[in-house]
Length: 119
Image (tube, rainbow, N blue to C red):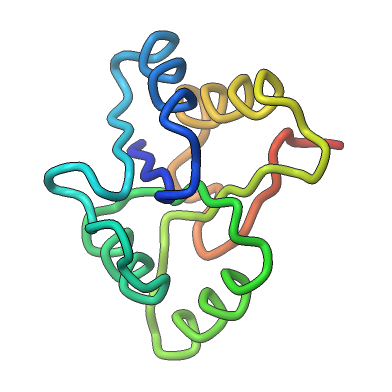
């Protein structure tokens, strides 16, 4: 499983994730090879589909509509993960690592899942 972090997600999350799960590829918007900073959300979804990356974003306001539009045009995504309101950094990180290490690739396909799970 591969994970792309939205540009508005702190890089501390990527650093700590890499420390805990170095075998998992995690990129951030703006890094070489990833979409550039300022890339529109619909383009990020197309990039995630083409490169088979799940997306982690805190964009609760518009991402659901962008995903709906993407799916309506026949697109797919490996999944979108968002932090639950009030979740701590540690809770989000724990579940991101769990999903990346133990999740099934199709488990989150074409959906938005809030982390931590089960809250």
